[in-house]
Amino acid sequence: MRQFDIIGAGMGTRETLTGEAAQALASAEMVFATERLAEICENAQICLFSELAERAIACGADRAALLVSGDVGFFSAAGKLREKLLAHGEVRLFCGLSSMQYLCAKIGISYENACIRSLHGRKGDLLGAVSYHEKTFALTGGDNNVQFVCRSLADAGLGGVQVYIGENLGSPGERVLKGTASELAEIPCADLAVMLVLNPNSVNPFEPVRDEMLTRAKVPMTKEEVRWVSVARLGVQPGDTVWDVGAGTGAVTFELARKAMDGAVFAVERNTEAIELIAQNRQKLGGFNVHIVQGHAPEVLADLPRPNCVFVGGSGGNMREIIETALVKNPKARIAVNAIALETLQETQRLFAEFGLQQVEITQLSAARGKSIGCYTMMTANNPVFILSGKGDKYGE
Image 1 (cartoon, helix red, strand yellow):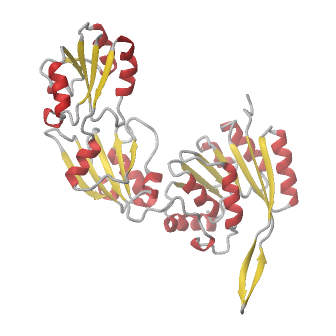
Image 2 (cartoon, helix red, strand yellow; image 1 turned 90 degrees about the vertical axis):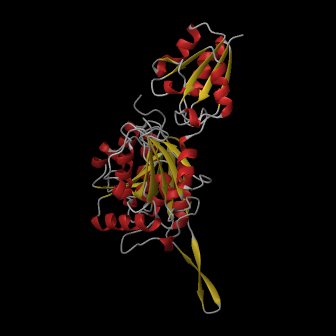
């Protein structure tokens, strides 16, 4: 049976190969590698990465080796190569030194408990990861290069976090930089780079937002008992994109943001005073994956990304248009609405039926809190609120 060895080449140098990997490379009859990794082995056949598996299969050698950068289990394409090769023989994987291990050893910082992300050739950002983790390691590249990522952190209010950058690690042009996100956003960097972000003020995303944690002023605020149930009804997942329409102080917004810790929450609000409060609460609560959108719904919703979940705390009389816009963007969006007035309850019920929402639930929540008066505790009631929730069922298809 033919044997294919997929070898993690570490930083792309002989020195960063493991001993086991070096032995496998030496015993291979044919070696295939991209131009950058071919220097490790004098006899390596240079080809495009997309051609590695096909070239190894076609060569006919009993033992062929394929070089991949870093570690075969760390954001590597080794898995896809393995799938292509399995039908043609035995496939062995040899681990290598990852860029995370290399950089953290260089700067003397452990990567235990680090949040690990890859932005290399991918969409997304680090706003949630950095907001809710003390350490965040990221691979960068393409449009999401180090300079762009640092600029996005600074623009969101995280410009003061400490960042380590590892550029061209293992090569003669290796450079390790340290500075704040704001400082490093001004320094051009090679595309082949990784970063470690330290945020000592990161927030525990599993801690619920309490009323006393929020700056409120005179803007109405959804009480904690109501928002906890409302957010739970939406079933927000870590990577979700969420709209909070009529965000007010941001009380629900930041509860949503902690649930969507790897996603994004768009707080839509037309009131200028409320917009300022959301900005203050974002800084206070550390939810930098919240994007503040000032304007009237549904007009401003057209430019927002496709939502997985939508919470409507205030519609401004445009409930139909808000729900329709959300369902056109995502026919399977999960929607929750808070209604204080009976008229809003009736309108929302009718619209949920009209748009064919499924798994509809309606709850009236009345909460009372204990208040000490002398040696007694008196229960003080909050206004009852109706919570309506449902899921789109391919609206418009």
